[in-house]
Image (cartoon, rainbow, N blue to C red; front, side):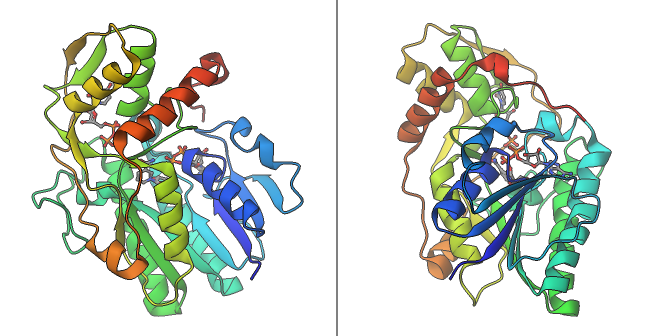
Length: 319
Ligand code: NAD
Ligand code: UDP
């Protein structure tokens, strides 16, 4: 069946890949974005397709659209991006969710929220299951993102319970791949840029903190599966359970590139989570999904892409 699908944040890293897949699958896709952290070039190749439409709009403002499905991805995702204007970040998660839930309610559309592993904060439970309620510092510098996403989850559940809106929530763990913003300040993009330039690689803290990295193709497959099944509203963890220290990640990037870069230590940012790994039992059981791309393979694809772009085409985020 062909659906009319709205993807908010559709010009971003994950959104642009999702739009591409949905357009290829034959759906009528509306990509909505304010281009805060993205470039039009991410979706330029889709502009000539008859079933693709691009709207510049900010989801903190209402919009009237007729759609069958909504993927709500609009929100800056990298710490440097969401801390640039923290109040705007909260507005995007809270007002943006209310506006998009309003569209879903009026149209009877199904709506999926891109939530995050950050709802678990600096977790005391490891690995993290969906029933873990988290350890977020509500007044810290990451709170604009973490608490915004937590309120968004609450809104989704309340619209579901009170207004019978057909909601879905996915909690996305660190995801990487081609089209991630090269200057997003996140660990994968920093390390690749630094290694390509032969510069020092900056390990924040001592590099012993862990993350689990999911390749973008696995992620897109999971969120489409979550949207397209009828029985389970979530939340569900989507991520790769292979856990690496940040030092190990740096060593992998150096080894793949044969780079002369050295590892140097830099201060650990405030509230930086110590460990993060998803328990994906629920995703396996309910969606029949698990990641297929190993970190080395995904890193090679991502490095190839970094080598193919002109870094000068990417600007830092602007309001
Ligand atoms: P991204 O920054 O590349 O994409 C976000 C997009 O949203 C950008 O195109 C940006 O311009 C747009 N946007 C931001 N505020 C907006 C607003 N007010 N109105 C309209 N558009 C707006 O980030 P991404 O990695 O593609 O993340 C997509 C979603 O997935 C986000 O909601 C993010 O929180 C979530 N997520 C991502 C990761 C990850 O590792 N990439 C992890 C957890 C959750
Ligand atoms: N990090 C690092 N060097 C960098 C960028 C990040 O050591 O140049 C660390 C950061 O402190 C964190 C981890 O890498 O522990 C992942 O950071 P990122 O910003 O990618 O995402 P997070 O998972 O913290 O949201």
